[in-house]
Amino acid sequence: MERVLQVINQMKADGVVDDYAIGGGIAAIYYIEPYDTNDLDVFIPVSAVAVGTAGLLSLDPVYSYLERLGYRAVKEGVLVEDWLVQFIPASESTQVDALDNARTAKYGETETKIFSPEHLAAELLRSGRLKDYARVDALIKSGKLDMNALSGIVKKHGLEDKWNRFLSKLEE
Amino acid sequence: METRDFDLSKMTVEDLFRAKEARRKRLADLSFEEKIEIVKQLQEVSRALAPIREANTKRIGREQCETSK
Image (cartoon, rainbow over all chains, first blue to last red; front, top):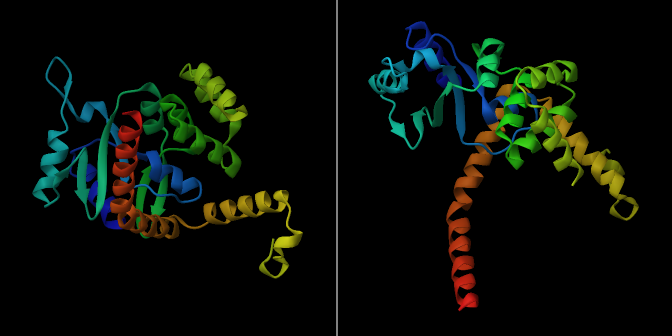
């Protein structure tokens, strides 16, 4: 994993992407107990992948860069040192906010950026699958969430209905 | 709940929930590196079980087809 993070950091240093932050399962695992997940979700600014006046998105610059380093595209990502890395353009407002407010984390000697627990919870609420709700529940129980901050993010992105749906699912 | 206290006959459902919560907390407090090591082990288990899962899915599908005939 450390080598994967070094490759992504180098990609940023080389100007392929302006910024990045880890979200998804690995970000959740940073805060809660580990579970089986096989990919690393890396959120990147849309500006890094927007092409042409129509604003079509292409991950070609990212994929080409990694291919030059010997990493090949597999399924919906790139296999980097045994980890399937998915590069996700931050198109939703919660994702952009999460990217802007990502915190620095350390893996071994390598620094990386990761969604804050509150932004991660908001993004999971937005996504709204049952497994996402389970992660939000675990994040709340972990005591690592600032509930006031989460409340602010929920309001900022109009996720009140999603929050209510989450609460009703918990009661079922 | 400590190991020396483990006595199934005296265990309540609340004890089980408490133990599960304590385990969750213990795992959540591990370092990022330790957690990723566990994820890698879970990935190996999942890979090893994949053929069995696939065979089961096919078998259940076949059985459902036959039942619906």
